[in-house]
Image 1 (cartoon, helix red, strand yellow):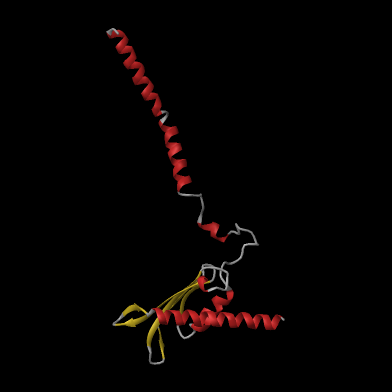
Image 2 (cartoon, helix red, strand yellow; image 1 turned 90 degrees about the vertical axis):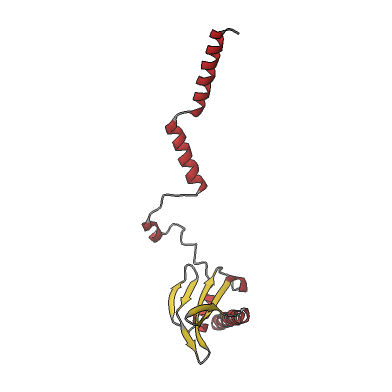
Length: 161
């Protein structure tokens, strides 16, 4: 192979490799599309929160008996936040007749009247800090809420029946 053929071959290889890069703008568009697809990004605005995007058949995914039972059982604690759409109840500090000061966070994750639908995290005040209660005390609180929820459900069926 002579020198001229080597130069031509080198130029063709360089041209071929540079063509692999493609159009920079097109590459940026592909990268942006991939980013949106990977992150499941949709163009939404704040006002989309107030639009009915799911239709009337989609209801609240929180069990109403668990919700009401949680509010009943924790009625001695001041409610700071209660969001029935997310199933979250946050209470403030409240005292239990000589037993100390407590607060609780309740999360209802499912529309089923089931123990797996209920998450409870109770805390007691100790030295100005929030300390989790024992697993046994947490379980007792969950049991009280579940028992009250079943009572409310039975009451509904007795009234309807």
